[in-house]
Amino acid sequence: MTDTLTPSTASGSADSAGPGTGTARVKRGLAEMLKGGVIMDVVTVEQAKIAEDAGAVAVMALERVPADIRAQGGVARMSDPDLIAGIVDAVSIPVMAKARIGHFVEAQVLQHLGVDYIDESEVLSPADYVNHIDKWRFTAPFVCGATNLGEALRRITEGAAMIRSKGEAGTGDVSEATKHIRTIKGQINALKAKTPDELYVAAKELQAPYELVAEVARLGALPVVLFTAGGVATPADAAMMMQLGADGVFVGSGIFKSGDPAKRAAAIVKATTFFDDPAEIANASRGLGEAMVGINVADVPAPHRLADRGW
Amino acid sequence: MTPKVGVLALQGDFREHLAVLTGLGADAVPVRRARELDQVQGLVIPGGESTVMDKLSRAFGLREPLQERIVDGMPVYGTCAGLIMLSDRVLDALPDQRTLGGLDVTVRRNAFGNQLDSFETDLDVAVLGAPPVHAAFIRAPIVEEVGPAASVVAALGDGRVVAVQQGNLLGTSFHPEITGETRFHEHFLRLL
View 1 (tube, rainbow over the protein chains, first blue to last red):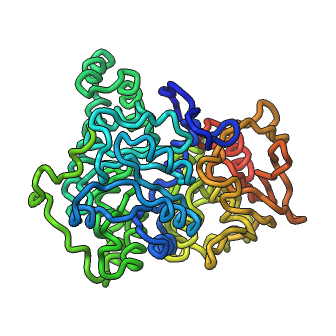
View 2 (cartoon, helix red, strand yellow):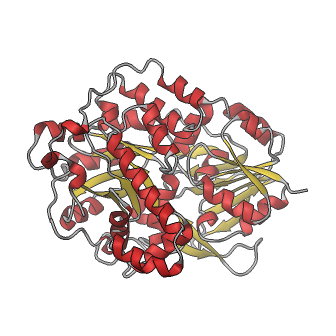
View 3 (cartoon, rainbow over the protein chains, first blue to last red):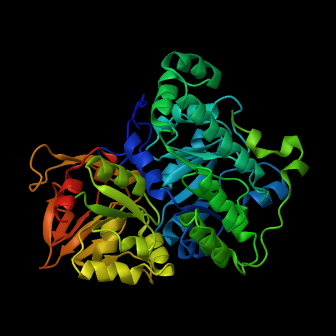
């Protein structure tokens, strides 16, 4: 793996451990180990254990799943440290937690709590409508959302070690997730077809550094792992994201807002591994009970669409 | 004839292993099913989450065939979670977590701590010679106890064991597949 963009090493934290920690390689490397897996939103220790037992590759610890944030409204912030620390203690798989966009102090707190990955997330209310967090300054790795390739590359420039396509969280409607992963993959494919002299203007149009654009064109992929998120609710949804080229999936409200969370969680894990095998996806999809009710993205008024947060 | 080797592809960084093996001239294929396991002469178990690999290998009827091949002497190389899967004994595992076994060692999961303690370093490995191996440890296990049947291949400066071999089974706590290091894979291919 190449590390073309490492403008600063992680130094801004008293939590840093020994030498060789917090490098781009170990930050991006953890995401590599999560590939082919399902990361599940959990709001209690009990849910975290159910997720781990069902085969989650990591859990996202938060106070309210996106469907509830959407229903209840108000400002959504980082979760209570007691909740996050409780989940960190309860499971042996990696724990992620969300900080608001631009809220570098929430990120400092999450790093101090020992979370394995910080999600600078549009699901929470942004704390800064201009700047994202300077993620190079942290020992903990960051995952960030993106709706298109330029947005993904800007987040990587800021130090993100993993990207997730945003989708529209808390809806159970997979259409936006489809749109965003197709957009990112399509733009990567378009870059691959360009001649070297065309990459300069491509960088201008993507509003991303030339070196990173050239690297994506050469690799035919992002230099970091790309998961997908936002509306995945069924085994078939997860398998579709994998067939569209995602490295893995986040499932937020889709599991613990359904009728039988443990069974649905295990089924989504199976469908993610055997994403190209309709017989296995069919087996995994049988008898799961009620899926989350969901709302159609088209019925969500534009000001309430989370994917528009971040730029 | 080019040896056909598999990489267990239930979850984890199996693509990186496939790329290293292919680069070394092996015919490398992903293995998710028992019938795919039947086609290969050796297997790599990648990095990932050992809990997930355990559950999926049991759910899809792969556990028994894997154990049979290991007992039969198939060469297997495990990195990180793969090392855990090959170990006879695991500390800090889930209550119902099982391994395939084969290596007479006791490993501890997440032995260095959480992701903040993940690191990269240079490691002297006698069987590979110079230069040192550049090794990435990512929420890595360590080998806490090496039984009489297994031997130490590499240890950190403080003596903690991070690579072991027993006959045709090889395990490392770290990930050569993400640092451009190919000598462990070459060593594995020579076991075929």
